[in-house]
Length: 254
Image (cartoon, rainbow, N blue to C red):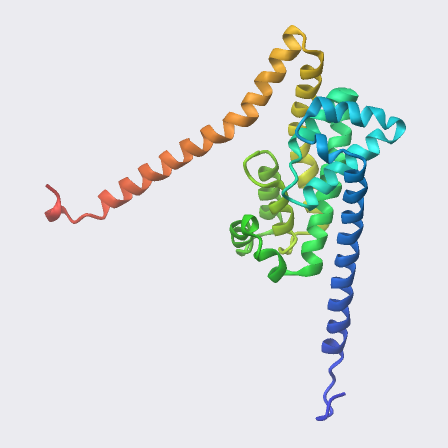
């Protein structure tokens, strides 16, 4: 009750919940940072851009290799500047396309769920300061249904030039349910993970068909987004030109 005799239970409960949410987010972030420190001390970050060296390092860890690879993928997603592509290629190179795909998917989904949860814990003000997520946050923040948001997350997982990490954080600021976010992420990650795992195996085998397929996959994943972006910009410019011509009054036309 306040000084006027009115109930303030909702406000009194909301403040402790917000504090606990921030504390929980901070605890998760500290745990992931500690995990990253362990991986760094193990030397895995030193060979991150060298899939073959990373493959040897992971295999050298023996039974801990898969866990280290999954942890590396999780850390790369939660701490966005760390690239995750070489990790996926190394997974296929070290464990083959089947187990490599499984480890990649586990790491990607766990990392995405942690990023989603951190956004829920820290809220809009913390995430919107991240430039990579600003436009995505603005796009997802519009009034959309649960199915529409699920579809957007799924589609973004299939497009390499859309930041996996930024989408995960931005989606956490929407009303999207946890299970829908997880389902969309799993469904979108699996096809890309299979391609990267096969590419990794092909690069290690370095044998005719496998190597050619691996180079084709890597070239496609690299060049296709660029081609799509160029095509989209050209199509948008053409539409703007047509719309501009349509607005010119008949008397002003030459």
